Image (cartoon, rainbow, N blue to C red; front, side, top):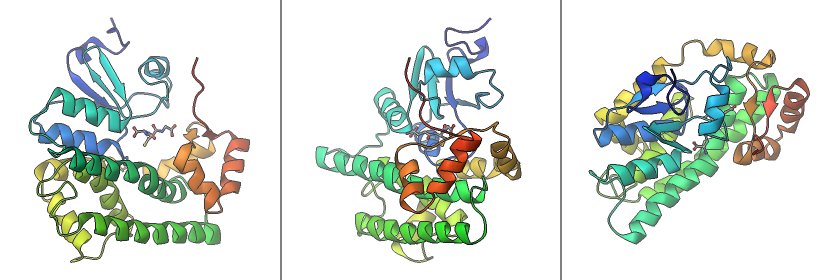
Length: 273
Ligand SMILES: N[C@@H](CCC(=O)N[C@@H](CS)C(=O)NCC(=O)O)C(=O)O
């Protein structure tokens, strides 16, 4: 028997986060759930093997993770999921109190999603998925490091003298920034220790909710050496879209896109039907 989403009955009535082990956008919703004390279960839908593909497409026409199942409600896109979490479990609030501060927090999260996330995505695409090697890889990774430095300058101005991007307390904006800066640090592009951004990273890493989610992400990275093979064999068609596709084209990786399309291990967004 399957539930109305097509997933096994044990998932009915439970808050389920459908996600990959590693990623830049889903940690914020898991941290949000942790901050609000909402129990949830994580499940990786079998999109690669294909057994969940049809079910998953019904929940999320983009066929991307993360997605969230709350009983009969299915939500996709990490920002919209975060909004759902804040709407449904308003305490403790993750957004600040005033409209101006709320807009500021949302804008920081949005710029992280559109300008920062593709830089880290590209580094993974090159390093973990093996899209470029040698001089080409060095050139692309060099661009990513330069862009990360620019993003850090911008973020440092946003932080100003506040302890958190959200203001006096940890919240929405910090959720958007933390997984990305933590990943940059992991990939060797982290903020200087003792800098305002470095000190902020230490502050948020010390939060139990953040520490738990970051540790789980790290633990999930075993088996990453299989990724280039999975891509090369065409079993894993990576989605190139929006800011990520722009990153490749803008920074001299258009041949990567063309080769991926030729080998059919790159896809664009699915068309709606
Ligand atoms: N805007 C979406 C982006 C989600 C997204 O890009 N998910 C990636 C994994 S990080 C994915 O599922 N990609 C599918 C693929 O590459 O085939 C969000 O914030 O949730």
